[in-house]
Amino acid sequence: MYRRIILTSDGSPLARAAVPHALALAAAGPATVLLVAAVDSTEELRAEGQSTGWLDLGGGLTNKEIEASAEEQRRLATEHLEELRADLAAGGVLTVEEHVVAGSAGPAIVDAAARLDADLVVMATHGRGGLGRTLLGSVADHVVRHAGCPVLLVRPA
Image (cartoon, rainbow, N blue to C red; front, top):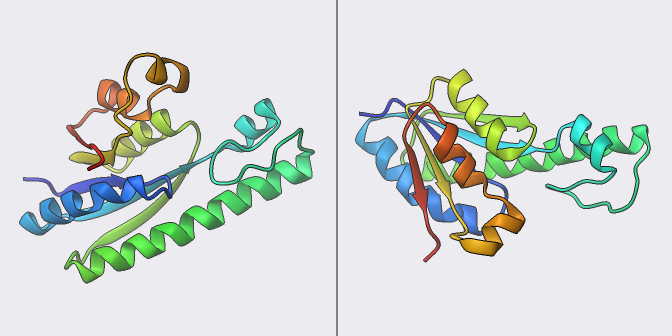
């Protein structure tokens, strides 16, 4: 049923909760798993003056520091996706692609789903509601509302 399944990860232990679900769906296909991690774009770093994703350097950053921070985030995200690739291979998924995308996580994942012709997005959610979601925003909420394909949200156990 699904040929191309996006599995998102932000590097957190929580994100790993979605891995078994993506594995089961990919094995039933078989399907290609598209690993996607979003990192801060240089524009975001410049606007915010500090890193908000894979690295938190704090304080205002120079252009050189912004470029270095963006590169370091990309490196850390790539290493993380390589680890996930190994986990998926051990679980029997033969076809895996790694994609590190720059930008705000929700829109970056939605854009990746369209660009990569995904049939499904599998992602973990913190399961926050009410004020917590309002104050922190919700990547999962954005993806559910804007993705052009089905989205499977996995709540933590």
